[in-house]
Image 1 (cartoon, helix red, strand yellow):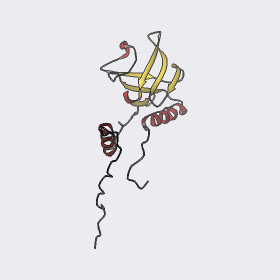
Image 2 (tube, helix red, strand yellow):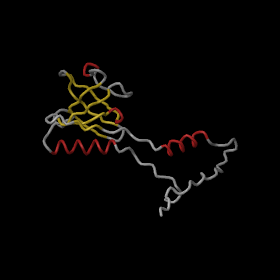
Image 3 (tube, rainbow, N blue to C red):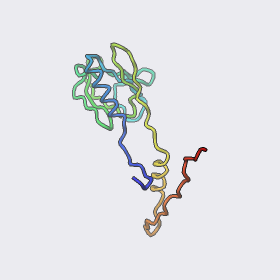
Image 4 (cartoon, rainbow, N blue to C red):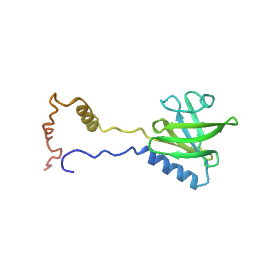
Length: 149
């Protein structure tokens, strides 16, 4: 790509979470998620929330219909003997760990490329009244390499 525009990639968090989940399960351990219950869209029983967070056992034997998609995690689980549907947006997952070891593996926050954020902002606010699309190319920056003698 010689135009200086980097391609948009999907979030790495769901892929990282799915691979860590598989690794924990493959080692016959019990995967648990640490979730920020205060994030918008989190659907868990209020009784399970402690200090704004909830720990969810997501082992295959503990949940029903587990789906780990790119947007979030959905399943049905029993809380105090009552079955509840659960939805956790991917952004609300703070970490995954194996109950047996307690070793917490935090999921890093998405790092937004400042150039792409600026480009999105420009795209959202651009557009002439006549709908023209004649944008001037961004100015070229000087070479960041120097000759050292």
